[in-house]
Image 1 (cartoon, protein in one colour):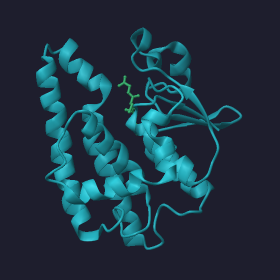
Image 2 (cartoon, rainbow, N blue to C red; image 1 turned 30 degrees about the vertical axis):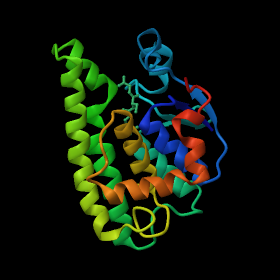
Image 3 (cartoon, protein in one colour; image 1 turned 90 degrees about the vertical axis):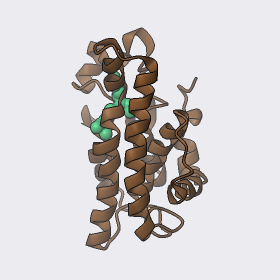
Image 4 (tube, rainbow, N blue to C red; image 1 turned 180 degrees about the horizontal axis):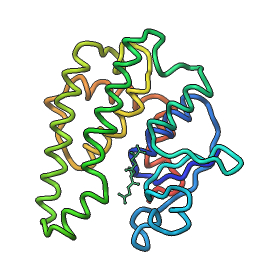
Length: 213
Ligand SMILES: N[C@@H](CCC(=O)N[C@@H](CS)C(=O)NCC(=O)O)C(=O)O
């Protein structure tokens, strides 16, 4: 499998974690999001993903999947062990809902292209951009902290790693990168620390990527 990825991309980070947890070898194909106006916008990459976003997973014979949720679900179905979606249907839906909070409600409004639009097209300052970023991250993390309060132990759902951990870790990594304090989110901070200690996560983290700068 070939993974089109960028070391700091949190959506790619999710997929890298799932691939590693499933012990699936893959080749990273770096797409530099800042170089030359963003390689994700190049005609060559738009041929892979017309939306111009990473990740994209090439699973052979020209078959390409985009969208981290769809990719992770595909990996779960293709390589069922270790299972990252619980057997219990309520818990399975709960894990998916946590993934969706991150992938649908937090991440898209803080994506590079949105942040760039705020400053370049709408004329907002760097400070306003950062304030926007922090506001939406902290709003989302507040909701997640409450969700985790009911179910987390070592990881998001009890003591088993699930897809929710693969989505939470990159979002928290991003929050820390933008110096968002985690003091108000003790459960998130503890789950993050535990998940970051897993080899699959260590190998997936931005600093361990071949394109890391
Ligand atoms: N919904 C997509 C989001 C993908 C996405 O937004 N990727 C970001 C990196 S984390 C990206 O490629 N941004 C490039 C840009 O904004 O120009 C997914 O979950 O895969």
